[in-house]
Image 1 (cartoon, rainbow, N blue to C red):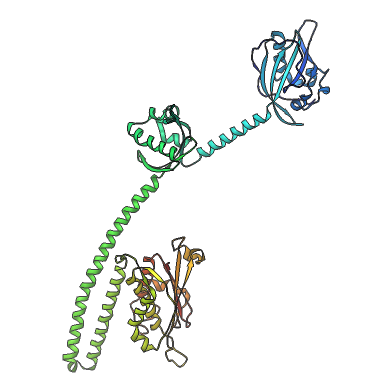
Image 2 (cartoon, rainbow, N blue to C red; image 1 turned 45 degrees about the vertical axis):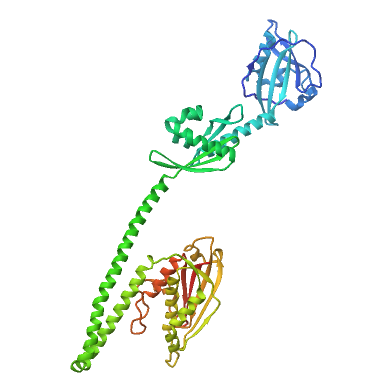
Length: 520
């Protein structure tokens, strides 16, 4: 027999002394009968195994014939060290039975838990009753480990979590709640009230206002099973409280949202300040544009008068100077109007309505009839979708792109302008199919119309693809192509105003393709 170790100390339990009748072999318990061995002075020095039931092997992993006739200290020499020998001696001397629980550890056998009862049978005999309770102890340990793991998880959670069981009256109605469990964050949140909340009922620790509001809330959650969300303020902290049903009670999770609330307040204050600033800038831009237009109109009027009345006196050089002055004034007037259009985009977001992009493009083509005829341009327009948005702003967007396609013509080898060919098409695409750089700029879980305007014009180097959408950014001088450098900035602003975006691909001398992404 291998040595064994019993970790739990024995505990005494007084019972009446049994008779000397042997226990039946069919008993559910494993039984071992011991005879007392005394020295010449009558002192107990050992015990001998007289009998053992056949099922002893299920408890001690040894057959009965390996035990019978052998001495206790020979079989289990550590019995003295772990207190079992002393317990057996007490029982045989006093006749008072004792009981204990031991963990049997042996490298040759699996861990075993034994419930041991020792009863005196006659003057010098003992009966050991052993019950193998390993399964129940392992289940108990597993439950304890799970409870410890759960508590560890709860204590390391960011939320303050507590569990409260319903207390029902004789009629089955909920009359109160008591706290069953709380993690460390919850105890910290309760502060000085923690001990009271953990040991007393809901109505013993709450204020009258809480008793009216919170109690009804908890009862409603238990009876309906519907989760409740609310917010509360404790001191200078904001908490999001989530109350959910858990068995016959509620589990409450309090999430500290103080930082997000403070950030939200700061953001709202910043947005309000930004709104005021934008309104001031828009007002300034509007007033400035009108104030600037008035002297420009006077300059143009005086220039016309000079040309009409004093052209002969000014001579050719004077007439040229007036013409250049008039052209500059006209460019200045156009620039002011474009700046005004750009500055007012954010303030002109009217209620979005559904409109036909196809009909809108027809209107733009009609407006561009003269440059189309003048350049002998060809427009290939595929079927276009209906869009939800501000029709006026979307018109600005596509009119600027189409005007550029007609303006930036390339020339052939002989120096003759090549007639523009403009293709306008659309396709529906889901968010996951968009390029990665677009997904970062657009709201998720939406479908988008990708509307492409491609031309055969002069094109540009792809490295300038972002630069061309900035205000006053031009890739060509004014002598080559007219313009203020604001048109494509307006295009990008309109796309963003509609929760969309724009991308362009181009190669120098091979045209450009502008793709506008707008929500479907």
